[in-house]
Image 1 (cartoon, rainbow, N blue to C red):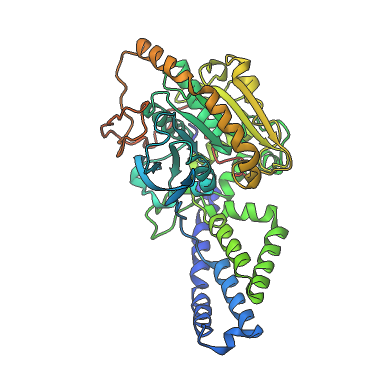
Image 2 (spheres, rainbow, N blue to C red):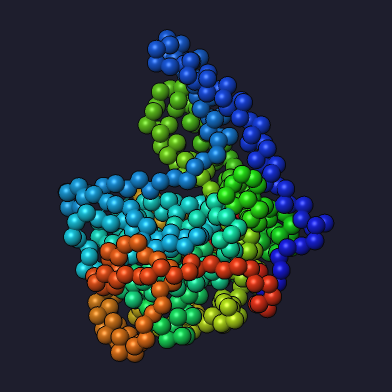
Length: 487
């Protein structure tokens, strides 16, 4: 891998995070003063019920929310309703490494245990995996649901090593092996590329633990097709510009102090500027709702921005490697992508069935960028391929919202059911072909739902991370930050 650290003259961006932290600290006295004002305007104070009082409360809240650091949201899925019954849900970490936790949403009933589980591979693009909360809720009544919960690079000490695109691919492969092929996978946006790479490498190696189905939602498989503003920006600026201007170091006293990252606040700034008018109007409406006493509308605003404004840092090596591999050199669709000196060829994939989902108005991943995987996976039978373009839907609408629940979710469910029955034959074939025991990739803390209903116990092993090994790869760093990352 080409060394991404440049001479000091080209590293002016390294202090960017420190400026941000200083600005956040400088606003703290103002935040405290406005909080005091809000405490004075409490339900006991008659001024609270006047227009002036409600206006003051609204102004204080909007300022506080606009300047706070948003904590990592919780999934908060405690109970779901199944056939009119309330069923308890327990969120458990069943596998982990320093940069990824595998979460299992365990239902407190016996349903869905006989069917292959669903793995949601969340994008590592600046937002937390909780962005897929609604997707998890949609599948829980019917399936065992697992999700990759990527960790904030700001919180991972340097002693835990580095995390690049190859490490992402290794992590996905290790999780696939936990299920022995008894699995449906849904990869959202950026995660589509490493999921495809992991599957192709496993197929090439004869590993039968590849999933039954792979469903890609808005994945930037080939960004040369219908390029969006995000793709054009990446092409216009080039890798060196991003390396110099958006890569910085985590400041003290964060646990990841000194780690080179693409900070979440920069990613969020890019998202906000893409639709600045809409966000300004939304906050103006928030003030109007608070003044008029429309608490329901105000709460919906809070719920959305509590999630949207909570962002995480990405490691610099992961961001830059994805940027180069996916958005600049388009290595995957050209059969030129490599991982640890292994060539990734999509034509080697032949076991999983594929379904692609796109949104007609997606301004992050252009129409056709995801669908092209159906043409690239030439060994997969045509009968095992399906595509759906949802009319009038943007990027986030392909995995959440009313249109997702009404139009996309039923299609995904039917596609999985159509391929559930393939598992029995595949398990028999894989056991006959693969007689060697698999080496576990890390520890698993709980086994419910794995390996076709029969619990497995994974021994503890070294986490899927590595120390920087300079010069061990001949290609330059590419960044896997979602199609959104270049924003």
